[in-house]
Image (cartoon, rainbow, N blue to C red; front, side, top):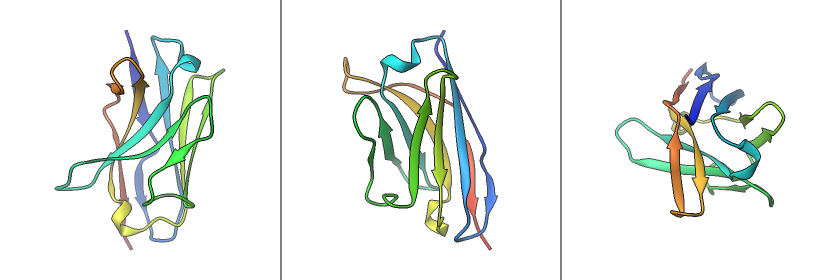
Length: 117
């Protein structure tokens, strides 16, 4: 069974940093690109980063501030969030990307990040 479990969310002040983690199980982690997606309160889903065999890619809204990384030995996905802004407040999800459907096929339950003074 594919499982994705996020952790590391919480309250952070504007300008601060936070690192999110996602542990994956039930599939060959290194064989799939992995993504982070977020949903701000009252808004739709926003894809923010993907990591696969080539260089990571980022949404414009987080480029230069967030860094996605992975550890294929530990089956872990990370999102380092620096210089956070109030508009980064959201539930953050890790999701597996599949080329078969051209989208995300498995999602975690999410972790809430609140950016507030």
